[in-house]
Amino acid sequence: MKKIGLFVIASVAVFLPACLPDVYDKDYRDEKAYDNQEYSFAALPYTVVEIMTENGEITSTVSESDSIAVTLHLSASGYSEDDAEEHLANIDVNIDTDTVSGRLSVRVYIPQDYKRDYGCDVTLKVPDSVFVDLETSNGKIEANGHRNGLNILTSNGEIEISSTAGDADLETSNGEIDVDRHEGKIEGQTSNGSVTADVIMPINDGYCRFESSNGKIALAVPDSTGAEVTLRTSVGNVDVIGLNVNISSQGDGYLEGSMGTGTGTIYLKTSVGDVTLEKLQ
Image (tube, rainbow, N blue to C red; front, side, top):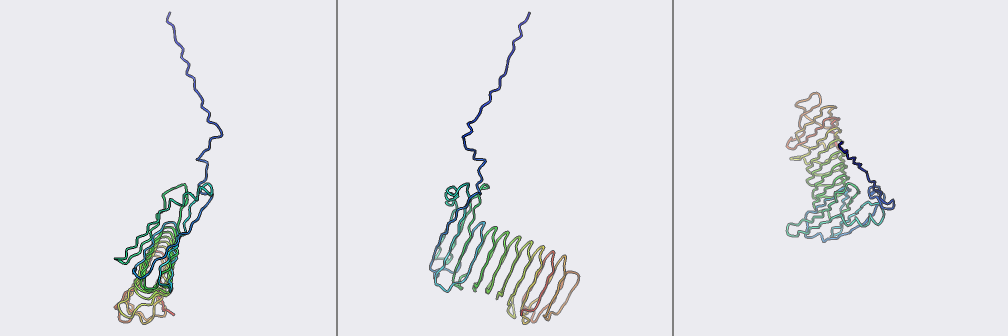
């Protein structure tokens, strides 16, 4: 007779002490910590100020001072006040003072941490002779009084400028563009946002171009403006109000013509929304 061996496999359960902390149960967004960093620079060497931040708003205004003032409003989240405070140091601030090229650059880099919320709002004050180059993500940009041109780029945020002059380039996604009295050439682009603009164009050789998707465009210019005019929309109406435009072509969703000398350019285009060109009051 053969002997049959019996083997018993026993499972062993391991129990962890209940007192051990479980880091996965912590909410790293429970508490917030904040810090303001202020910087001041003599304006004389600089013709351009560049600001770049992430997850934050930028507010830029003109000052009568002969200095450039930058305030960074840093924020970080954590599961406690101490934890949040500790992680503020993870936000990297890089400042480049290039007096040879005349460019002052302030760049803020946010950690890529899915568990925490980091951000940095920026307040900027500069003389009106300085060109400003402003960039952020997930934030609104507001600029007031700049007279030597501006470049603005954001995502998921509105753009508002007022009492500005010079060459202006505005770009956002998922945000409105609002222009209150800009003098000079201007170009703006947005998606999922409307455009409302008052632009004082020169009689000759002016340039004004706005494009959007899923948003109306309303532009007001002086009746003395000389420009070729193009208005287009895929779903919506086009209209000219209070201006003498010699229409050369018109149909469903488009209008082409000229004003005055016709030496400048007005180009307005959206995919869904009305397009209106009217007289600036």
